[in-house]
Length: 450
Image (cartoon, rainbow, N blue to C red; front, side, top):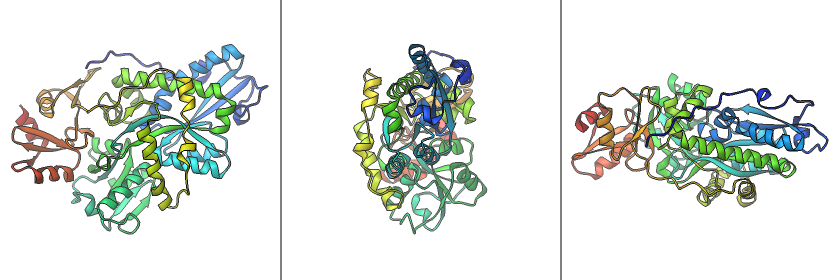
């Protein structure tokens, strides 16, 4: 459905949004100095991990948290400042939180567990208080190989070099997927522990055979023609998500500020859902990511669903992640129930939860358009795209429902039906199970649809 365009507020410096500080806030103020006239709240986020945008990049650009704090300051006479700290992964956010230098942070499910474990170990306990983006099947993590690679499935990774970020959700997907493929994740491959950007460069340079990473790296590389999807994390059918964690000490001493943050996050989530194209373009401008890639994950039919609620399915999946991290020696026992705290969100945001994620539909984004158009079938999408000035066309995987770029998908003709798949392996499984079905090129799919 077309969506009304609503330009975002410009990204303004905190100094323009709030009164000038009269004293240095710092972590001491955030920990409860009652005499302080200035309080600094430090938020750690990951700008390029774009399904955290409602607690990071998009939230920051909209200025909603600063607005909430400014309203609080008018009532209590305190000046509130927000210091935003951007990181590539969750690990440095956890390090800063356990040092008492970051108050609120957002990160993926596996890093959240490490956050819980390190916080308890270092006597700086943290609590999971909300969710940003999630995918109930695990589609936010993908294994990709280089274009032209002979690899066609995970089975081909035996003995190969694979880059990932150890301790991340993407590494968890890799470990589970390799086990299902009958490959020992520790001895069956040569695993390189690398930052996402380093791993992406290694794949492009040919120094690794595959890369397992989280949003938005696989989509970015595929969009740029630098990678081909090898394994869709949604095949695990296990939820993956990112969430917001807070220092317990801060949450107790600055309860109102945490409430303000969660209200601001909810407002940012409402904005993203109402104006997905505008939000994607805003995030793209800040991060340097292609807007088409941001929309793949965060769009109206995107891979990620945004809802702050701490859903039971997500918490159950978090508990299933603990043994994977324990086996890697990254954590001991983690009391997930003690780590998860739904009370702040219930207190701060009293409105009903969002509808559950539905089945993704094919979607077309034309150049110059401020809205997109969805279709009931891949064939209808291809017919509309033929001859049009297409900015991006998206289509869900016929088996997992994971959205992917139509021109990067693997297409199968099955009689008069056209089906799309994220990976060659899933397309082959379908063809093997359906007599007469055959893999075709994207151009042939467009021709047959028309």
